Length: 133
Picture 1 (cartoon, one colour):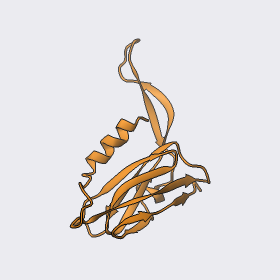
Picture 2 (picture 1 turned 90 degrees about the vertical axis):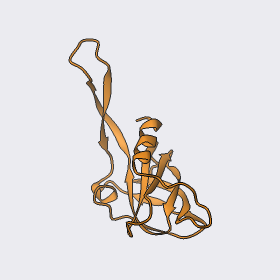
Picture 3 (picture 1 turned 45 degrees about the horizontal axis):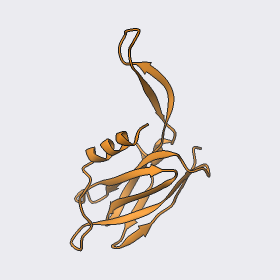
Picture 4 (picture 1 turned 45 degrees about the vertical axis):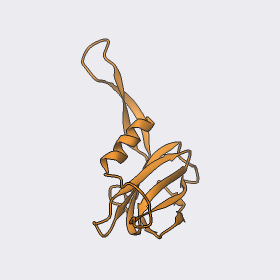
């Protein structure tokens, strides 16, 4: 899946702008591994528990990410898609094809996330060691 897709997803989340002194945002970076292996690509989102702070997120590339995150407690969603097939966009012989994607991770890391992160002012580091079991 292209980097453009992830950027579009993140923009649709309403990513906050700025981490200045009055900001309710902070920076976080780290690594993601799945069964001990870093994913080539994915996305991470930080969704504030208070509902008042903006949601933020970033792209995971080769297991590494850097993102804004709300100060305070957030739910974290991590998504790592894989291509499971292709489909024609139109029912014509010369139709372009589109990848069919499937989520690698179980819902406890995204749709029904159990992951939490508490952001503090300044730089934060958080590594995520996830399993598919």
